[in-house]
Image (cartoon, rainbow, N blue to C red; front, side, top):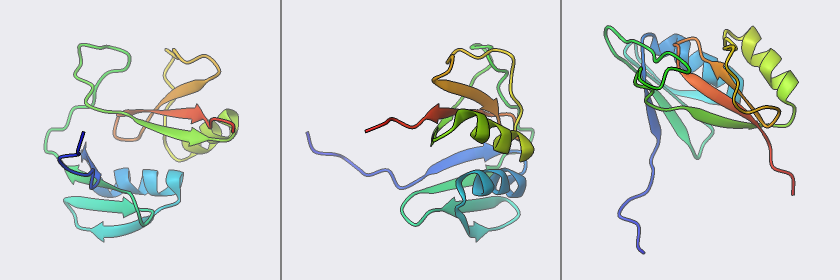
Length: 123
């Protein structure tokens, strides 16, 4: 099958693009590549994440599947405990419901969106 297109980047709705981008910039150690009040972008040079202002933004309620979760990011990490501690220090929150056991953990970013930190596959 031939691809119709290529993924250019991921854009996330946000109540505060600057703060949202800053959180993920620090988690991923990426650079800010675009900065406006209503839109921020971070990148590692090959992949980019944009954060666009949405007025009256309402985050989903984890783990309520009826609340309209729109996306989540999975991030590979070498050490779940250290990554969790670092993300929490940057403003993430750890919800009580954790379906991943010791393979992954769900955290909530400062804008209210869930994301997962996952053990990096070995080999």
